[in-house]
Every structure is written in structure tokens, then in C-alpha cells.
Amino acid sequence: GEAVRIMTGAPIPDGADSIIPVERTSRDCATRVQVHAEVKLNDHIRPVGGDVLPGDAVFAQGDVLGPASIGVLSSLAVSSVRVYPRPRVAVISTGDELVEGGGALAPGQIRDSNRPMLLAMVTDAGCEAIDLGIARDDESALEEALLDAADKYDAIVTSGGVSVGDYDVVKAVLARIGVLVWSQVAIKPAKPLAFGVIGSTPIYGLPGNPVSSNISFELFARPALRAMAGHTVLERPVVDAVATADFGRRSDGKIHFDRVTVSLGAAGFTAERSGGQGSNVLSAMAHANGLAILPDGDGVEAGGSLRVMLLTDHFSYPEGSEFSGAPRT
Image (tube, rainbow, N blue to C red; front, side, top):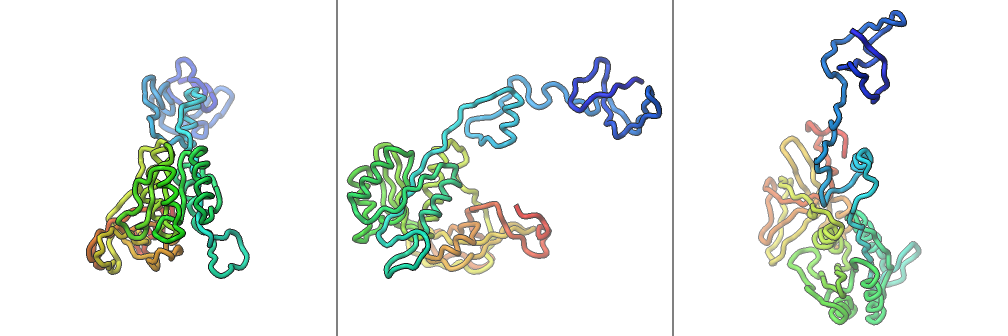
């Protein structure tokens, strides 16, 4: 037989029908090559069209373009494609009691934890988060801020000011300058939740309690914002998990969402509460990787089946399970 040396990726010389890696050969003189492996027809040859053929649908509407996608487009000499722009979402906290930054708190003050959290959640949803700071409990100032935001941005997310207190002004202002579609939902936490539109701009008025704010964003704002960004998968995945302890609750006409830690073992998912379930206990939310969905009723006993919305793909693996030595995602 005959052989000629070529570089990786070079065109196949006329008459050649196989390639052997150079490390599987040796040369005993300038004109002889010894081959130390079996050579089959078309070995190590990449045919024309082996990746993408003419007429192939490479990507479809709703596909997320990642690094490999950019590489595929470049290999096809596609320098630009039509994409959905990232929605620009304004985030506003409301309340005279809110302060930001460090320093000592005066009586009646609390730190604004919701706005940094919601800015991160908006970004995680695939949008551009716009920080509009803290709006005080003044209807005229809030009206001006909301009208300006509705004119400039694709959506608005506020926290606080949607319950029934004297200083819960978001609902009143929204009803006056826009359309208030609803102001309560039958869930716990996050019963007070306002949704409306100012012109054509949607506004999500989330509760002020930190956990309520987080969960209501997950359930209502996040899917809508993902749809605005062109995503086709809008909802978080929901799985069945075994309750490791009792998930008791009382019947109150609401669906409860308990913060849970989900583990994955050989038998599937298990779930346990990640901490206190009060709407102020944000640390339990931070340690949770799922929300257990408890329909109205008496709850679920230990060993029973829970429906759990997964908030992440990071799971713990019980010691001794076949997954316990696996790398974490």
C-alpha cells in the first residue's frame, strides 16, 4: 500500500481511503512506514456533511443559543441571526421603613433585602434587570416612578405595598393609572399579589415579606418574563418526592408552598423542609432547592408522595447511595 502524511483536518488526497493516526505508526527509513494497528476502510475520515446537511433545520424558534450553538453558526458562515432581545425589567422596592447598605438601623427601619434578591431573580430568568431603587410611601411619587418605568421598560416588578394596610399604596396607584387585574391569590405564602398593566407594560406587585416576594416571583413573574424573552420552556420542572417527615398543614382554601431540600438517591427524590416556614424566614428559602406543593387539606405524612417544583439542578446525595461519590452539578 501507499501512504502520505497529512495534517489533522486536511483534505483527503486523491486515492486515499483511510487515515491512521501517526502515533500508531513508525518509520524505519525515509520511504517506509510501519502501521501498528488494523486499518479499516474510511477510518478517521469525516465525510462532507457529517455534521449538518443541506436542508437540515439547525435551530428552531425558542432555542437558547449557547457557546456550541455559536460555533455551529460560525461553521455555517452565519454571522447573524434574529433573536429575542432580553426584556428590560424595572425593579422597585416600596416603603418608608426600608434602608439599603450598612450602618445601624433606627427604630422601625429594616434593610431592603427584596430588591437585590429580585434583581438577581430577574437576571436568572434571562432578562436585563434595571434597579430603580426604593420608592417611599407617597402615592404621587410612586405614580411618577411607575409611569416613567412603564414608558421606558418592558415590565415592572415591585415589592411591598400590595396588602390592605394604610401605607400599601401600590394597588391604589396601579388601579388609578392602569388596570388592576387581580390583587390576591389563594396560595401561602404570597396571598397579597397584585398584577396589572400600565398601557401595555405588565406590572407584578409582589408582597413585602421576603419569602412571599421570592415565591410569588417564581410562580407568576418568572414564567411570564421567560415568555417575553422567547423561551418555550417557561415552568420549573415538577417531580414526585418522598416526604422524609410529616408535612402537616390545616385546611384554609389555599395551596401551600413549603421550602424544601431535595435529595436524589437510587430510589428517586426525597424532600425535607429546609427550615422555618414563616414568610420572613429567608434563610430557609436560601437553603431550599425546591418548593413542595401542598394542596388544600391535611398535608402529607412521612413516607407519602409530594409534588415538588425544582428550583435548581443542585441536589445532595445520601451517604452510601450510588450517587454519593458523584460530582455535584
